[in-house]
Image (cartoon, rainbow, N blue to C red):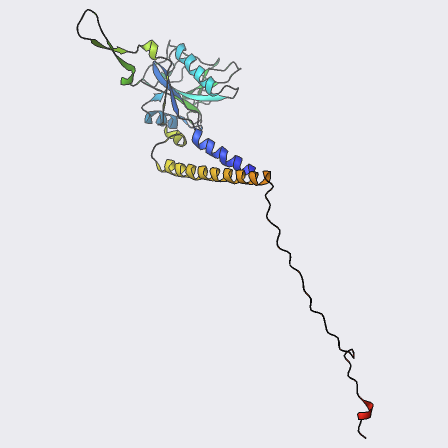
Length: 278
C-alpha cells in the first residue's frame, strides 16, 4: 500500500509541477528549452510558433547571460548542447550567417579551439556547449543539422502597458494636479523573467485547451481523488490499530448428541424353545 501511495503522489507531483515556458529578458527575451532533444528544423519550428527565432549570440554580454541561465537549470556537470541561430553558408571558417542575415566576419564568436571544422562535410548548424568544469564549457561547435539537441529561442520584447506607471502629483504652484506617465527605462526592465505557456514541444507543460490537456486534466482529477481516498483508508486503519479495535468473536455453539438406544439382546432375536412345534 505504501509503495502504491508513493507512486500515485509522485505521479500527481509530476503532472502538477511540469515547468512552464520561462523567458529571460536582456534587451531581447531568451527561452532555454529543457525538454527532449530535437533536430535543427524542429527547433526552428518551435521558436517560430512562439513568434521567436533561434537565439543570436552576438555579444559577450548575451553569451554570459545565457550561460548563467543555463547553469541555473543544470547546476551539475551534465553535458547539454543547445542549437543557436547560426548557420554555415560556405566552407570557410567565417562562412557563417545569423538567422537575421548578418554575416559573421569580425563580430563576436566563441568557437571551441579548432572549430568550426566541418568535420563530416555537412556540419552546417551550430550548438552551444554546457559542460561545467571542462574547457569546452560555453564554447560553440559546428555539427550536422540532423543531430538532436535542445535549443535557445530569442524574441523581441513585447510592449507591455503594465510597465507604464501613471503617477499623479499635486504641484503647489498650480490649482490643478498634473498627471504624467512614467515609463520604465531599459535598465529597470532588464534582467527580468516572464512566464508563458506556448512552446509546442512542451505540450505536457502547458494549460492550452487541447485534447491532450483535457485528458491530462481529467486524469489528474481522477488521480487526485484516488490519493485522497487512499490517504483516508490509511488514516482509518491507523486509528483502528491505535485503539485496538478488533472484530467480536463468533458466538459459541454447543453440540448436542442424542444418546443411542441399545437393544437388550444386543440385536439378536431369541426364541422360546418350548414354543417349537413338533
